Length: 219
Image (cartoon, rainbow, N blue to C red; front, side, top):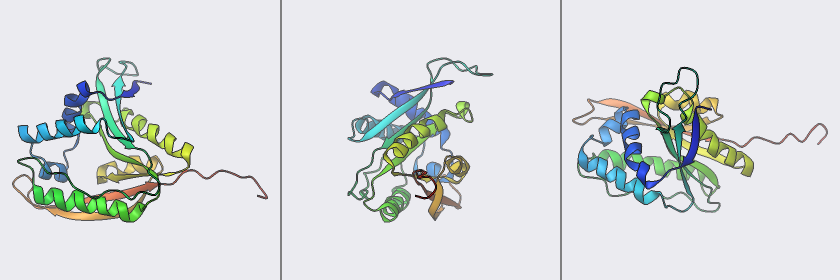
């Protein structure tokens, strides 16, 4: 494999924020997060804090410098992800943080708030693996780093026989469907501010069922 998976460490945080801002160029990300120092500092502080979140697994896919046509340096972080383990009997939280200076607070409240509430409606108190974030450096996209990070969590979900859940931007849906996710719902948001000139953005909510055990004929 051209990538190996490792736990994320605090020294990786600045690189991960670079990856996040370069990989998410859709109207929602641009509309919420101006690429300014205050927003970057907020993202870095959030990652530093959430590295120690109970039940959260932060992973990085690191290039090995191998593979057909791979000219990337060995040891570079190509992608990262955050998986959250199941919490049976506990409904997802819907509280929102205080947004950074410069962010579009109204847009962040509207979208992240509605997405959190939709997860609570769709999943309730059913324990599930939650893919909170996955981001791949554009230089590595299409090489399998993101898929490898996703399969890590999906193997956990399959072993435990529970669902996996994620929120998806439209461009990522084909990959998620290939990995077994199905659309459960969607929300359209009209975004208009100094960075986005009046565009509709669709966020999809996707669930992956655990594989059913084959009990054989006559069971």
